[in-house]
Every structure is written in structure tokens, then in C-alpha cells.
Image 1 (tube, rainbow, N blue to C red):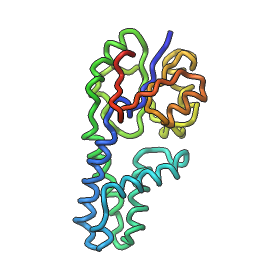
Image 2 (image 1 turned 90 degrees about the vertical axis):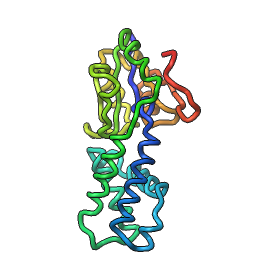
Image 3 (image 1 turned 45 degrees about the horizontal axis):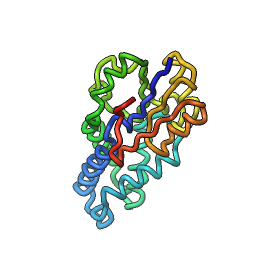
Length: 207
């Protein structure tokens, strides 16, 4: 019997949530740092630094808060803010709280309960997104790879998920976005990988 493993990026509009959180973080920095470098910051640059640092630290840290905090520490180094200890921590907390609070499921997620009637479902998450808004008990297991010391691209993520869902990897369908780390992990583990391109408006109907 098959089971489904969902990438949180398929179910939640994370791009919009990160952009909104980036705007809040920039406004926080504008209010606290009056230098020209700080005032010139853009949301796009904040998100770019976050991604660069996260890519560098994959596999070396154990939680989403550590990743985002390291990103803001790098950002403050770039704009030469060295006289405000604790600022990175404060801005990071604002960013993560807003990101996770405003992350919303895509509309077609209402179909998941019907799918759960026929298959066991798993979810792979990155941060502290309130995935329970999709429905209490909807997922048989939820896995945060970094919390167990794994990168999303590591096939052991898929092996763990398959074991938790009670199936072999080749009976697991990994539903993710094109080119994702989780998709690469799924292919390495011999799972079936289904790419859903949210940017092009594709959804999870028909699963």
C-alpha cells in the first residue's frame, strides 16, 4: 500500500510568508539602526542572505532558529553593526514569529482529509509553521529533518518517513516542488517523486 509524504512548500505558501516576514525584519532594522547601510536594505537582500547562509550551514546546525539567526548575524556584519549586542536575536525573533504566523495553506489543501481516508500521510517541515491548521490528526507523522541532524537532500529523510508510515521507500510518494532537496532525496531513496509546480499554478488535485 502506498503512502504520501508532503513537502511543506507544497501545502503552504512559504514564499509569500517569507517575503512578508522579510519586510517586517527590514522595518525593524530601519527603526533600530540609522546608518545609510541599514536604511538601504531591501527585503530581497535580506532573503538572499538568509538563503546563502542556510545553504552554507545545512547539516551543521540542528534547528530552523539557528539558521535564521545566523542569517541575521551575517546581515549585521555586512552593514557593519557591531555596537548592538542582541540585535540579531531580536530581529530574528520578529522574522520567525511573523513568517510562521502568516504562512497559509493553499486552497486545495481541503482535499487532504479525503486522501487521508485512503492513504497514510506524512509531512516534512522546516520551521515552526502551525501545520495543525490543516487538521488535527491529518498527518500520521511529521518530520523536521534538521531536528534529527539531517539535510532535506539526505535520502535518510525518506527512509525515516517510510519507516514511520509503515511502507517501503518504493511505495512512498514524495509530493514536492520541482528541483527541491526533498525531491532529490526521494529519488536517491528509490521513492516515487511527484513534482507540483506551485509557481505555475499547479496543485494537489488528482492525487
